[in-house]
Length: 174
Image 1: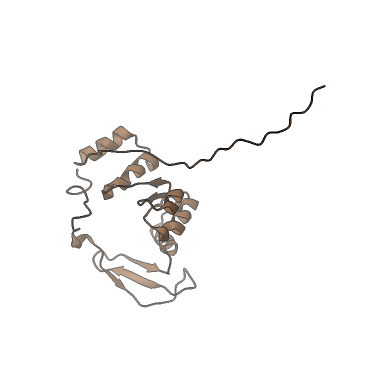
Image 2: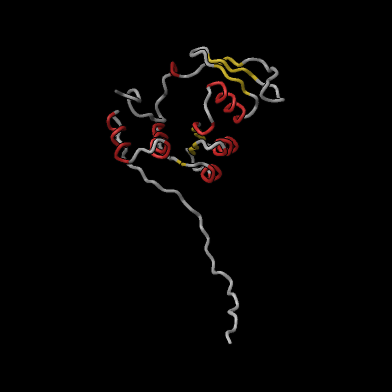
């Protein structure tokens, strides 16, 4: 069984346009989610719709509510500073966050950071840290689907500064 279709994502290749959503964006309207006006987005291909109230957090909350997903089952992937508030929100609900860029703000907030040319790479921390799969199991899963986990450098940079504690006076014995 091929989980991921016909191979590896390559950023230089064009993606099949038939797989993309094609949204029709509605006019501004009142929203029960926010005091702000919102727009209804509707995909004419898959009939999926959601309300955008001006923030990614509001959209995520509405989708979770509509789909009945509890906060600790949300996995959020972000690549820029506009994702900081959403990652903080997801982490606060015990969800799982993945940064996919070298953005220093995200790296401090995300529970995992993945830097790769392959879109499938975000599955590695999900399989390992969320589903509890061990390295040999993950390698076997990728290989059984025609992919090879060529290099996996697990590293998280801790910035630590250690200084000498100030000397405390020793009480006199006597």
